Image (cartoon, rainbow, N blue to C red):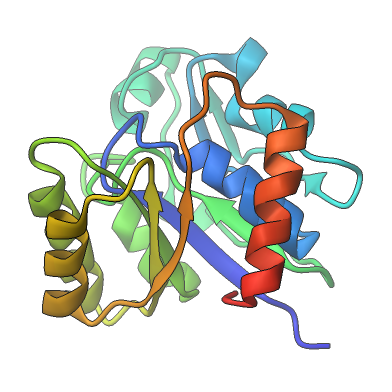
Length: 207
């Protein structure tokens, strides 16, 4: 069976990207890789994925682990580390693979390179996580346009939270990017919640 490999990005911070990544990784039974972790090293996104998924998901070690919860280039400068685009090489695996970005696409990883440059280098389809707030249409459209301008394939959009018909219909009709799934907001994200949502994804067969 052909391996499925995707990149996950958010339209900004705190949109639910890591929870969505857990759900997708669980649905695919994938290897999960967070290339750059800035801050929260004792409770990193990799730790969260480990807690929220079962043994079908294998968490691979980060390439860079930075101490400060800042943009990677700023955190790296404090740590005395130089992040190199050439060292952000996709893991070799015979399993499905899910790669979670850091923040949005235009996050700088050093003085010249942005995260989207790594996305271009990896050349995998991108799943965009969007959550509704004032300004989210702008952020979603800018994310889509940035990917399209660089010729990076987009697998589709995941909306987090309650349906907002006005926002979603505008985004979908003006971009022709596929809608994959909606992930509800819950008071507490548990492994049971991730399992339930992963089952929904598998039944939709949209990945």
